[in-house]
Image (cartoon, protein in one colour):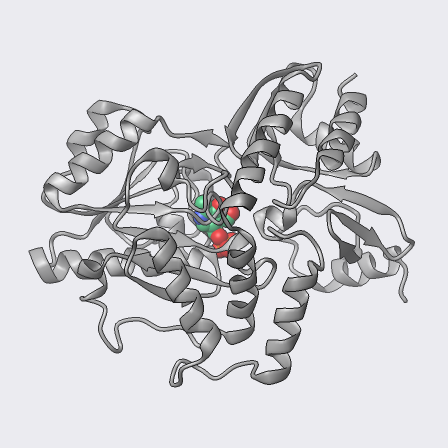
Length: 390
Ligand SMILES: Cc1ncc(COP(=O)(O)O)c(C=O)c1O
């Protein structure tokens, strides 16, 4: 097997340098632990940025994915497959939404949501109703439309012209709701802004927003790409906010490590997305759907109650660490604000040296551990963080 140094050199020579990577080449994983070619181990509190919801090589997930790969790996959307229908049925039953479109990523799911919202508005109210409101400091993806939806100028620079008619509201500001006018098709929100620094929205404001949307028939779109699939302690974060969005997007944790995105919607929106209105070659891929079905079967109510219990324990432990000013987030999506001179980037690098993988989001250290973590894993991560922050 090539050494870590060889793996890194080859990658660096040929892969586009769009990521600031850590000098780690991972070759396998088991549960909460990732290993390099030399056998070094890291306790992984990143889940591949919120993706590996069941950790590495979860036995039921591996079994379902390998069985499906051996039986039927792809068909295109010209034909029906069992895993796709099963996943759609489960997602609808567990959300109260009516229909789903499958794609391959979070950005693609959000693209689909924007298209579905604009189609509904155009059909019902005419072409002028195309404005999409999102929030300042939001993040919705890297395609051109989802960049336009992303309310952070830094992501836009040099990539214009971007798709038009997106505008950005200040979160949690009651006065911002006056922007919901007759030309607005949809408002898109993340209940916890992930890339924006693990910032949860205020519940009362979200409910006021949902009421204003309902009153004006403006579609409320929840980007649950990062918050969804048990990450915040319920299957979707909207359950904790007490609102049912018209459209919900999911990706990241849904496939348990395979690329899949989903756009869930109410029938009133779905009715406007007829044949030819949208598509994606790999969407609904049976292997990805088989992985997602195992994730959803695992995330039953008892499992989610355990996520909430472990999240509370982790949060309490983090809040008690030296030099942690506050802990933000919801469930197992947590951000740490650090006292100077500690910076998120330096703490992340120091944790890595000590055998713990963590993320950053803006100025915060961000933790997105696999949902299967144990109390012992929480203790081990806190021990390393305490040493790093001593
Ligand atoms: C809230 C949110 N939306 C969309 C995306 C984009 O997802 P993807 O990278 O799968 O396209 C992300 C990724 O971080 C995200 O956090």
